[in-house]
View (cartoon, one colour):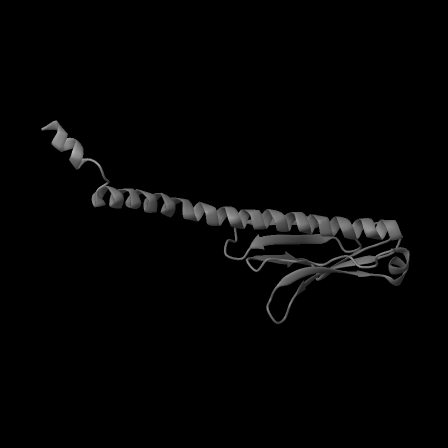
Length: 150
């Protein structure tokens, strides 16, 4: 009697496989939204660091060259992608060995909202037109990070 039972339990039944797959699908369905949210959070953090770096770069370049530097917040008319670019005065360009500051392009899921289209930093690194630059996720109005440009 027992030897017959041992021979029957050698494999996995189809029902056991289906139950395991059902549990796996259920777990993945709970995990998927949090993975998507984590990706958006990481993009937001990276963009926030880049915005802070852009503001800091403009300020330091203006101080180092003792000449005005303008930081522009632009939206591409063709694809709507936003970016931060810089314009250096001729005096600043002459004083730098590498006269270009790289631009920063924002991911398509994120957007800027700014008080001004550009912020000018004088030769002391001070902003002549203080304002706020806000970074947010396009689909979630609640995810916002604001930067005082002053």
